Image (tube, rainbow, N blue to C red; front, side, top):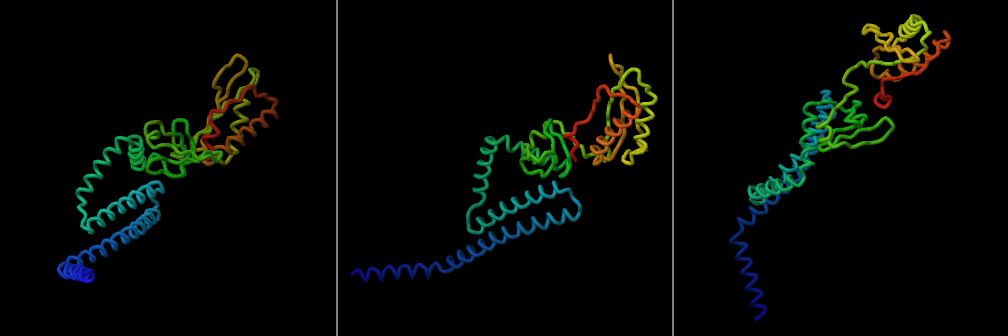
Length: 282
């Protein structure tokens, strides 16, 4: 009796398979196609993203824009691949998309800060206020831009620290780019005694500026009496130099001014330098 029951079950299954043969074949085909779509989509998203990255770099497009666009394209391709995979399996993706949309709205409300960082990242890449490699200041946070990501921007400070700044904080504050212009103004003030011959001061400093090949003579130089203090007089010294020579030119000029004034027995009362060392490390 038991053996007969097993035979009946086998016959039942066999009859069902025979009656639904076309359906099973179609399901297997859809499964194979879905797996091919999934793995092909993942593989192609990586290949195309890398190729897009290389093409943009070969066309000298800023690395910040290049990384940003390739990252968005990569994740966008993955989302499209997953939807196509589910659709091929017969899953009603329209309802899934609706659920994802509702969930996205809820998550969006809960993660307003992160979304604002993302939107700020898009604006930063679009308007390109700075590029990778530029030395910048974001409202008191300064460093060299390493990379602009979807939600944050990474800086490296002059002393080797890594700072990650949220993009929303950057876009909502002041952005100072020290590399936006090719030349920088060297601005120094020195104070000397009242009995000093200011014509001699001007002659000594102008000679130093004339000898320094880093000074851009065409943009003009300034050596003028700029202030009268109770116990000293101030001279302002201004000259334009290439931005990558600012620090060295300033250090050398200060040393040479001190040496030259010592030779002429002119004492410096109070030196004042109007530029920040930390912001010009590059």
